[in-house]
Length: 262
Image 1 (cartoon, one colour):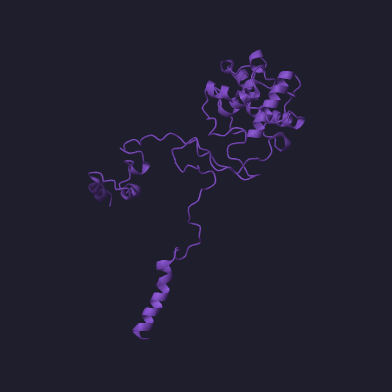
Image 2 (tube, rainbow, N blue to C red):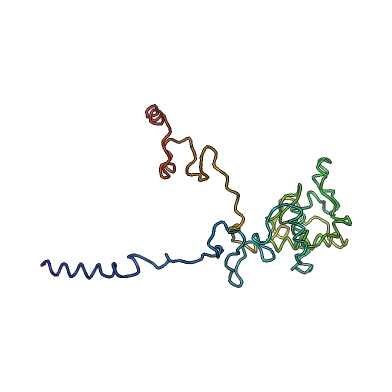
């Protein structure tokens, strides 16, 4: 083949690559876009701008009444007081109260008691653990539904967060607590320990999901490192690949130690 046809063929092959907007072997997925639940501001430090709204009938990440970017998960009285204005979206139907009874007996009765009087199994085992208040007091009866929901969501004092209970189920627990206070709740045991079937909650209604991107842990400097990146951590491995990639200098005496081990 002569040189001229070869040059023409090479030019025909390289021209689309040189002038085209796409590269070879692209599937058109690598383009600017906002991922689901990614902050619209594109600023990692932004904890106030909500992400893109989910499509209709999609699975929420942090519930539908209050999200993490609206009210934090801080177990403080002021935070929980701020949730007192939340309206209970779940009517106190027999099905809601029955589901709340299951959740209450699994998660709450050990401290607050089956009857909600504060005489739970934990107190019976050791009276020193009887710090759980009664839900029958005038103070507890005067709490708003949103406040009780906030206690379940955030926890407060010695009470931990019960955010493992799904949002809809937490409102069912609130309805059951109201039934306890009204004296209309069924306080008999739903089932015995280890029993399955109808005695335990049904399948998850909000999974699969992932933690909200706005509840990120506070980054602290890595011990032994001048930076906050764990890749620069002064590890024990002299062949630490991550430290090499980030330009970390080898420790003095590393060569001698290597010779001793080889």
